[in-house]
Image (cartoon, rainbow, N blue to C red):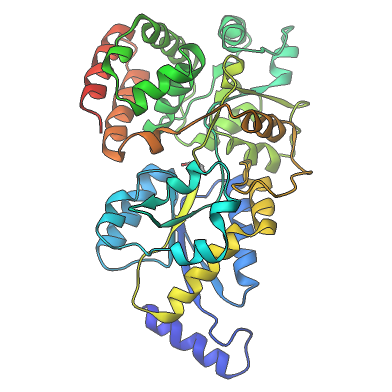
Length: 410
Ligand code: GAL
């Protein structure tokens, strides 16, 4: 398949088309929601401007669905030109198997070590001293999104933290509003839990559990309070029967639900709906309790291929994704923060400004994808999707099972 496309481009080049060696490069990712599609289009536009062609390989269903497909294509000898993964350890085995391209030459030529901030983002791309991905954004999962009118229309103040929000739930239900919108894909339930953990037990306990795999902390009374809060969140979300995270965000945008615990990619949806941060919706970092930014997010990896044109086009794409202009254009639409500390984000909205301020203060934690192996995280996801869908499972039962998962985690 690939070689046919190559010849065509060469043929086109011969008849005077733009770049002599313009190359079609298939890029796979899981960005299919309204806001995600608007953002990824900025990458496509910038890459096409180099004379090459972005061949979009979007896979619906979020990372949990897309990643196994991407991995099996690469291990099955049908690699794409470039692919999205989250910062961290998701591509670890592919890199160890020698299937991914070493980008150290590109990184050095473009001074990524000086540009990328915090440096932990580039560390997440580095294995045995070599760089295997281009980080493209900082996405923090530590956010609560609230529809202002849902509260004020029902005679309530917009909550400023988790306790006020949970206390408002009974009155919201009476008013026919779902207090908490929560999509049922497993990763979303773990996301809600770990955001509660950071807010209520603190960033240190979170890092000890997800990073240090500390079963004692996982079994502690502090964590028991977090599991109680998770049981409250389960009750608050029992009427939000949707799968996709952006459908949950849409419930908040339309006022069917009062709030959602979700990463700041939700911003892209508010933007596409022309809603204004601070006016139509409120964003509370760390549930308004512990204001931290999680340095999770997205990076692009490039399968190692024995093809000079594709290899050259991969290098061009990596450079385009790190360029100052593209970083601003992409991240403003994506709702994430740029990986470069030297770009001007004048157009950033209230929520992005809050994120930038927290980042500048250095209140950062790593994401579960950076702290835990993909296999261990999948088991944690399975536990929490079961917990959020089984009202008979007590907080104590869930905590006991979580402790044994953490004991065996890698
Ligand atoms: C995350 C990704 C985000 C966002 C989200 C929902 O893994 O880092 O960019 O798109 O999935 O699909």
